[in-house]
Image (cartoon, rainbow, N blue to C red):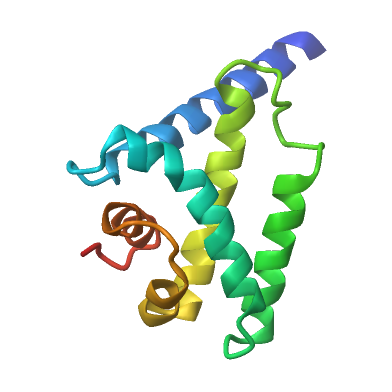
Length: 135
């Protein structure tokens, strides 16, 4: 098999994986999430991450993961460049979801509820992504 065939197979597999992960993320949203709340979810998530990263009551390892997540989001270097339609921002969604799942489980639901700047539907999405349930 030529090198380009292997590369095409790897890229195809990664695209399929990203698609499955995006589908799973879409399914975690609550049915009452409005378009306006969905659009506000990203700024609310950034504020949540910043607030949790500054919370000295959380373990140092959790705060370090949050700061690394913020650096990744602010970095111009991504797993998939943002100029690639749809997939360019999809990698950010997947990285945020995986990092939040880890951090929120370690920090606990009360810390997330204290730091959440948005509405209840957005908090429910975060809690579902983190596997905490979502009310």
